[in-house]
Image (cartoon, rainbow, N blue to C red; front, side, top):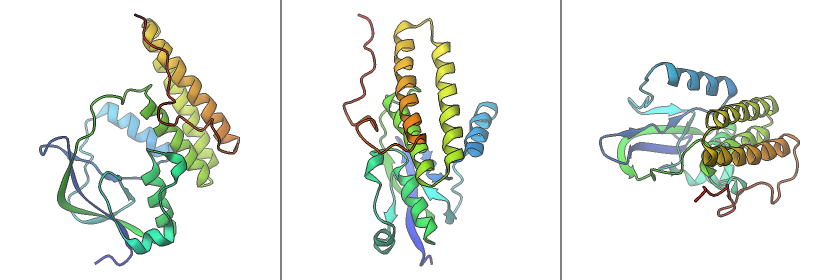
Length: 211
């Protein structure tokens, strides 16, 4: 039914069979990110959008069937990204070559995602935002990269200010902000990737909480 289908994503359950994870995603843009962020704080929305088989912008990489022919034409994951946004990049490259991403509502796996490490000043948050800026630059979307980087830094500084009375958390936020600021600046200046483009696993070293 989908001869130009590069990626096919099934219905994924999040930690339990009672919860369906939203795996139907849209490519990032500053306007979309801002709109989603505001609406998520104003109203509770059902974001699954998985009522039936459909062509979508791209799929969460947690569980995807890929067509070999498409991968040969598109290439594999960008290894510079490590983790987070690498699925966005792969689907984007395929889309530019005329391939499609298809959601197929067939029950599949339970995604046993860990429950910790996803706070706003974590390594995961850093890599997600850093890789989003990198992806925008890679696609030639400098304005989008600049807007995203500036807004992400502004939000991180605001959260650091909110936690100023908690010395340990404030120190962690300052570390997060400084690492982010350095990475964003070098990406926007189009510096060649090097050791600064981190962290690699094990290189995230925020201040330790006081004993």
